[in-house]
Every structure is written in structure tokens, then in C-alpha cells.
Length: 263
Image 1 (cartoon, rainbow, N blue to C red):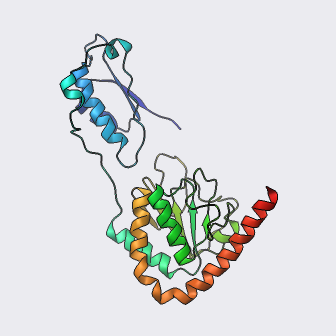
Image 2 (cartoon, rainbow, N blue to C red):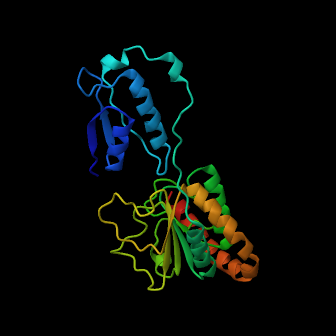
């Protein structure tokens, strides 16, 4: 992936302009120069860097400081002052959440595909309960982190093929490539919901997966919102869900048994 660094940043305003222009990195001038940054100015810039790092989508911020400046005295009275810049946190709209819930509760063959976990421990627990309650199979396709336990009764392995082809609704959780467009064919009427801090992966030049609903936000928070909104609709569908859960659990048990035999 190509990253862009804008150098010569002297103050917070210039840092904001660089970020607005799409810079991934900024360079601060602290050596003797007309663009030199003082330790006092660096404090404000570092404060903003921390806020950006904790904003949605969360990620690292790179600041390069010359060793001469690192050896200088820093104003002690400002070192432990409270941050003046709060992180920006994104959340999906109520309309988008309602649309996603309608799709999921109406689906006869829903599917969850995850690659980067469920956000945190709380999201992991909520997604585990949601998948089991609603009898939704969970596929970890090219997963970097598990979204439910590998022995969860709804965890059906890493191959999405048999599930993608029958799914009428897919919940994609923070996945760059939820399936292979060359190998897996979706139903024409399948609705796809993407969840994540950047659910469309806007910085990836070519990524053409359908997205009927995009839920922007921290993964665990979005999962919790979906779970709470789906819960009131469960009782009316309990008989159908019990049958679906049994079918998925039988498949998952076979997958787990096959994995143990290979081990």
C-alpha cells in the first residue's frame, strides 16, 4: 500500500491541513530552519497525534524527532496536562442499523464472515451469543483473529463456499476480502452488510464486494447495537431458529471432528 508523508509541518494548523489532504505521515522540523518546531509546539502536535490515533478508524501515527531535540529540556508543567483534543468516534446511523436488523431477522439463510475478530472481549462475547441465539454460521475466511471460539457450535470453519452460495444475507465483520469473487458465487437476492471502522476499505484501490448496508463504527459497539435491536424479534421465530441452529451445529461438529483427526 502506498503511504504519503508531508514534511515541513510547523504547527497544528499545518498538521490538520496535511491530514485533510490525505497524508498518512507528517514530518516535524525541529532542526535550525525557517520551519523549525520548538519542544513547546511539539507538545500540541503530539497531543493531536494521540487523538488521531484513537479516532475511528484507530491506527498508529508516525512522528519523527531529531535526537538533538529529544535531548532538549521539555516544559515539565505541560507534560502531564490533560489532553485538549478528544478522539473522534464514528457510529452508524439509526436508519442503517434498522436496515441491517430487518435484513438479518428476515433471512432464512444468514451468514457471518469475519477476518479481524469482534473488536474486543465484549464484542467477542456478544457475537458468540448472537450467532448461537439466531443459529447463524460463522466463517473465519483468511482470519487474522477469531470472532468466536473455534469450537463454538456455530463456527463452521474457514471455507465459505457452501454457505455463501445459499446465503440470503451476509454480515461481513471487518473483512478486506470476505470471499473469493473468482471461486464463490452469491445469490442474486443476497443482501450484504459490512461492519467496521472503514467497512468499504476506502484506501484499497480495487475492492468490489457488494454492500447493501455499511455500518461505520468500532466493531464491538456495532455488534452490541445489532444484538440489542435483534433481541425483541427472537421469540416470534424461535421454532425456525431452533431447526436452523441444529443444522448448523451438526455441520460445525463435523468440521471440528475432522480438524481433530488431522491433528
